[in-house]
Length: 178
Image (cartoon, rainbow, N blue to C red; front, side, top):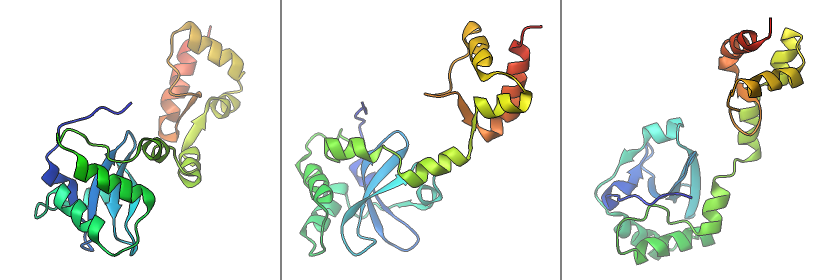
């Protein structure tokens, strides 16, 4: 569950180098979510937090978030239903402590990686089976060594970024019974 944070509502409106505006409406674990008009309609755009796009955004303090939301809502551009609900949530908000303006189900769905994002993650992933294949070890035995030595699983599966390959091999060799 995401925690609410106190925010300065003037700091949630951004510009990019093409001068498009982006209203921050959701702050998830891996992604930020913005309302934008960049494609000629008002919609929610999901952006990975560590992306180049995030680094290029510039805070735009000419308008507060509520003022920008009012402009978006009264515009004649087509709006997605999720965008309308987010804009209405911004305008109804009284305490300025809420950060996520996406409807609950949309906010939950927004954190699920797309098929392309999952494929990109998998391409950079190294499995225990791959490492064990190179070392000519049984993955089942290695998992047992990990459990015996309280090695924490790095996620839901025994997978690591490819950049950690040497560290994992060193760990396996240090746990291997002599």
